[in-house]
Image (cartoon, helix red, strand yellow):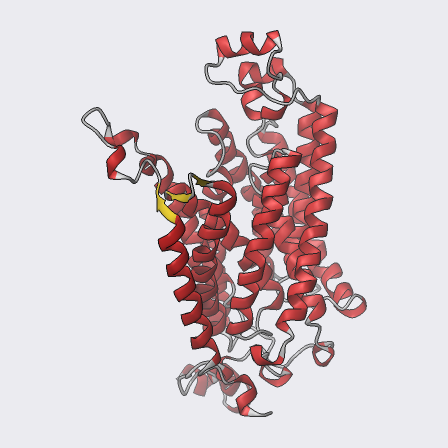
Length: 474
């Protein structure tokens, strides 16, 4: 291996400093405060407790924990790639959020020539960041930090455009992000890893292993994600009963998937033992599966059933589908994102469509048209005036029927998968460029290539291969 081919002493700093200069220029030219952060909008009659910060900041902090601690620890499961999993997650996340504030801001918060910045922008940017980090899971250990930054640079605009097109023109219900976050991230990541296929890793890699400590660290990430997932699913729902249901459904779905995951892990293990990889990943399936219908009146029992279904599909995917894709489809899905985000996302979308078809105004009451905004009567319809008398501020909708809304949901699923996969494939070709310092096969899943490592970084191998158990314990 030519040591210069993966040396980032010049390439990564140049990329980062150029990006920062561009970001500073764009922030200076286009970003200002929104009315909740701008002092000029405040007066003697302003109640500080009405500021959106008090409503949005708790959700922002919860999602922050998921992004930086949850994903960071979860991705540190490889024995000698803990630095890479955590630090590259940290690096990629901070870059993606800064970039998403600009790109998403242009599509969602741009008016009067400026992007108006508030805490709600940060929450949206962190959702875009979550998309990048999920996709990162497909190529974990096989990419350089420069490649990851370029992937974030390309994925955030593709995601923002897809999100804008789906929300503006298809007008769907997707409170928990099953379509626009989980499906998009999954198939974008699979598109990237399809192009970055490594024939030399077809039979696995000797460093593609975990250790007792790395598994513990990864489970800590799982726990952070598990605890704060209700905030992730409910952050952008309507305040009040919608948000309340979203929290309840997410917790119930996660609880059901956790119990099911442990039971299936014991059952499917030939030795009848619990597998840590199942605890780290499959227990989270319920949080994804309830996403598309999380704010709807689906009933707690349905949320529980969705948790069980999502967990079962995820578990079987890890056991059978991931090896099949690697052997026959050139898709080396390192973290199994197709199982935790793809399969469960498809189940969630199906459940959401069923919930839309079965939703009735007598069950929801007048708030039916706040949840299903696109089914509200159109401007000029006499029924709209009647509803506005019951719900002040209700905006005209599109007058869609349940069947029409369901068809738009289906269209959103296929368009999101298509656009994300295409974007992933194009991004994969870009990441294959030689100056982006892709690691050679022998240095995959190894911190030594990009980190100044301590002397004992490979001690798990040394203990296992060279020393006795007593020596290791000492």
